[in-house]
Image (cartoon, rainbow, N blue to C red; front, side, top):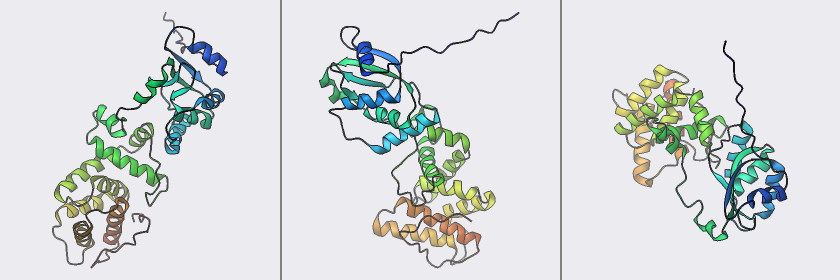
Length: 292
């Protein structure tokens, strides 16, 4: 007869007041580290001790808030850091997020640090979504990450790609789980870019993902012809697209990312409507059209 054993989660301290937290952090000599459950009320009170820090970045706070609200905030070893007087050295964005989300998180805290150590904190390179995907052995990690960022914006209703908000790594992974076909879009983008190097892979991959959802067969043909330009009649939309991006890059050197995607979708819609194009003209301020 087997007996199932219940596995209990660790019971971390959950200080409710600044005095309780100070007692925890100053229980020994020198710096000390603890894992605690940080509640929103305490996070708000701790922000009163945010006396000397870099400028707050609201977009970073919003990213953290979404992860906390989704229940995907991990205990990853990143610590809230305090000096010997209890002032915040590192962690203001996380504290603001916990306060704004109104939900507790489990986190590592380190106290009793010399105040001068703040100058060495966060001086390393931030790990990006592309880095996280590469560490997970994801093929075409950088391209997949770029496509995920744009598809996330598209699903948020940002058709001009003008907002500064970006998905967190957790949100990007969830989106890839929801749309694994983005991997195939990244492959096609890489292949198309190698043959026709005038459109960024991220724009090619995003366009492929969007139009493939409309018609996979037409999508495959469209990207083959975009790559090689073969067997296209005069005034064909793909010829107009190839000519437009080639000449515009030669004149201006750079095309805005959203404009690349607009060109791709506009040309796709013209192909689907069997509408010839002598020239590809898109208003600079127009949102990216919806694929048909």
